[in-house]
Image (cartoon, rainbow, N blue to C red; front, side):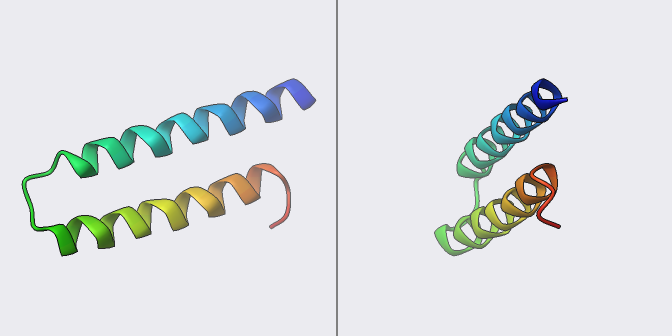
Length: 55
């Protein structure tokens, strides 16, 4: 059980990092990149909190 939670958390973290990297590579202005990064981070934190059974 604990191993599955740890693996889920690691996979979620890796997906967040990958999406943040891809957002950084987008050919858009800096303001749009910053908004997209904030949205990705918020979604990532919510996902990690769900894995930790906080929500």
